[in-house]
Image (cartoon, rainbow, N blue to C red):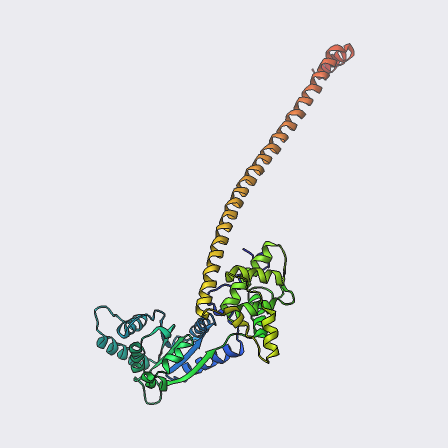
Length: 390
């Protein structure tokens, strides 16, 4: 709705994990490099963790887009499954038939498939997202898959992706063997204050111009304090701010807009407590912006609540846009009818002018004929002319 107003080719703060918008902060660049290295060197197990909305899926999609045709890929997103179901999901994504087969058959067929891919010169990769939801049984099945290897490299690369608690799960003594197999491990931290500013400008520049909107002093600080550096929350509030600026027909975003957006998205007044900040500074401690926003609930719960409220706001916005579109359509129809009536009026007016002109000519002709009848000299002259022509 606001893209045309800001001369943008698309929404810059969409929530979809689009690698087109991938911003490589120091942490994201490191994670991407590590994972690419693990795939290229056939390192076996790789682990990527990060908070909800930190950009894990966007990095994964970027890696997938760069995978060449010499690679086979299986991606698992549904991890609320047992070991048997997990193997079935992997086989199905590789294109293997799974119906009516027990776990032993599934594993044997998967092993045969991986051997065949290696013989054909193709590298097999398994990516498991939301891996923190896997049971220990399922994680153990994944570990056993890594036993299939050639003389100098693994036949399958496995990337486990999950929230920070995945590290705690893998640290359990019962999963010691799995932990020892992980050769690449990286964690995505939230963006810092400077990275947030660059992140926002990067996304604007990707679909238009970085300076299509002006952020007044204190705006980036407010966004940082609201989001805690989580990209998904940055997108949520920035999308809200762009819409607010559009509604007010301005290209400037100020602190009042940020505060309004925070109150709308957070269910509560989240203004900073300056007393808390001064107290922390006096004690030699820094107060985490993320802690100010997320105190009293887990980050997962907080993000979920904010996203739920954002969905409600988006639904209301979509409904309003639909009404506006219908009114606009009706307005277009009315404008069309008016234009048609105007054209018809002009046409009738031209016809009236032509008729009036003809009437005037006829009137002049009648007057001429009347003068001819009334004037004896004209009649005499006409007789002479007629004789001469005879």
